[in-house]
Image (cartoon, rainbow, N blue to C red; front, side, top):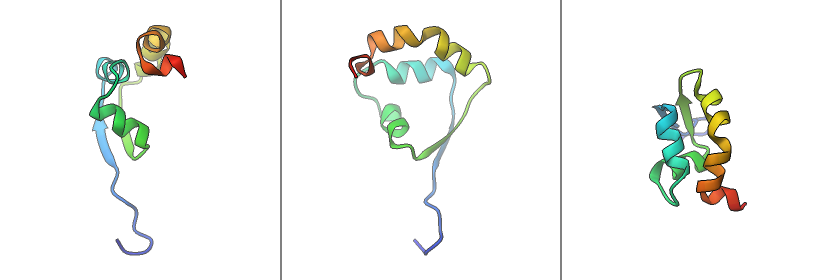
Length: 67
């Protein structure tokens, strides 16, 4: 990689169901990508509202709830 070149980021379109299902199981490839921070997500505007609505359930069922 040449100096000044930016590493290619992963870009993907995601909906709420896919994102939530990536957060709940213990290990998924999508979770690995999300935790890497090396991505760009395109999502519908209502995704944040849906995450807020189900956040307590996500924490309860995911390993993140223990953090």
